Length: 288
Image (cartoon, rainbow, N blue to C red; front, side, top):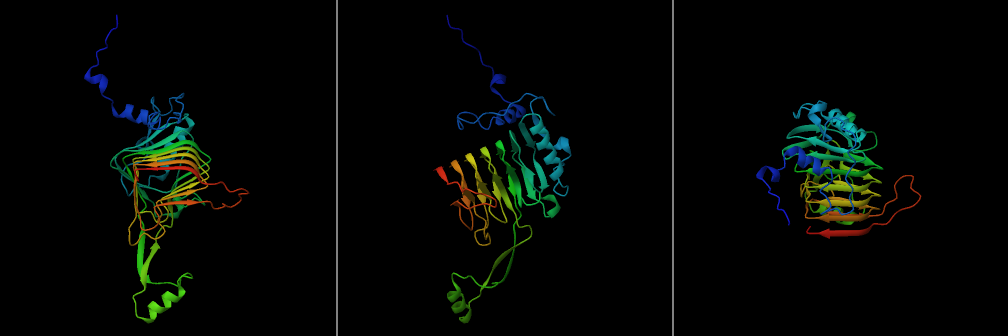
């Protein structure tokens, strides 16, 4: 005789810690069939391998630099074998945050990472808020926001554009206002991921990037879902949405990209020191 199991309301509910812990599996097999959850072998800072940036000194006040506290949380999570670095609601000023193997940076709704305006907060040569090199099983998830605080000035056109030199000369002779917007402030990207495998970007908002929003270099198995990208349609010079460079097996779905420059770009540039350039292949765009 088959027995029915009674399911109570409390059984159905899932508290925040369970949700974040399950998020460590990067949304689960329903979306990423081949995505393997990071191992949870060492309790680390938290029994569920959830590393709250507040426990490492972040205050959630924009005036307090949170770069080192968030970096410390990421390092602790990686050392413990993987898990989630949890960013609760609040305003956090950060420079470069380097993702490492099996780490999910989970931004709660109401949490905003603001790009630091201090060059000392950036890893030398990275020029980005979120950085990863040779990492696997990494993610940035949640309903939070990454704000690049792009800044511009509206001034006379500097120099000339070699592709439209004649047209510029004609316009100037005709008295056309040739002022345009130029970037000021920090000249950085929002994401640069180099040679990484199994990447998930889910449900986050990326806004006001000074340069390209997301740059993928020589990556494999990339999943971007439910992401919102915005840069000013008039001022957003060189603020591409997603640049897919020499990267394979990419799925972008259910996302909104509003930018004054290219939305999605496929490129095969040779990076410094590379002997071989890989192609861009196996790209799927769904509900963009």
